[in-house]
Length: 68
View 1 (cartoon, one colour):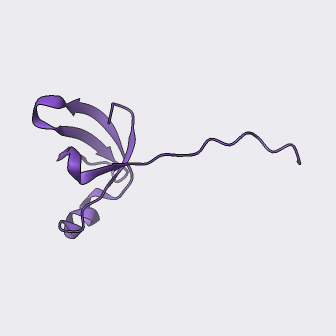
View 2 (cartoon, rainbow, N blue to C red):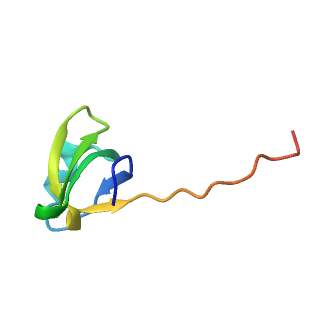
């Protein structure tokens, strides 16, 4: 995981935390020594989360359609 990655809070155990985060979020900083990241969430809040609680969102880039 790196700065700029789009992430979701992905923990079934901490399900109530999902409500306060409002996925998705963007990674602002990664703290290697503590295995955590500062994330700015779509609801405007920023939190520091353990990397194991975050799942990176990968988007497939598709070429533009030629049938317009």
